[in-house]
Image (cartoon, rainbow, N blue to C red; front, side):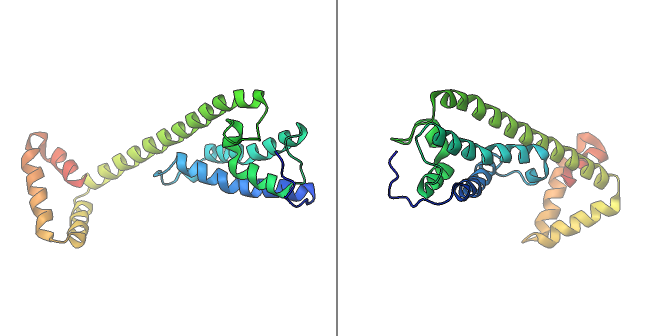
Length: 188
């Protein structure tokens, strides 16, 4: 690809630009994969995933320089690779093609990152379910906590009488479960 309009700068600046912009793009991509899952960033797996997505544009920039498609001193090339490395790898950028071996390895990498993201989502969902179960068990086992929860719900409800009505409806609908079952449904 002809990037003769691009200013030449030292190679390490270009690699630094690729790394920084690649980190921004990687964070955006990982956030997309785990959208809606609070607490995902505390897991070690996600940092590994972020590292792979962050270093991939640097590796691609180096590879494109070695194959002659870009020059490692091209500022515009550094920005282009950092932002559009996924499109470059799959052949979506005209005039700039990654080596065919890299293109063939891209889909297994995408599959792997999707599996890692799914594993992280599953762990977070299991953790949240266990936490909610422990919380419900704690509330149901202590009448003072249940009363505090009812007061909290009434305090935040637009009409506190609706909370009492819903609790009575749950009590009559789940009476067959016994007092502990009804309390669990009400707390949930």
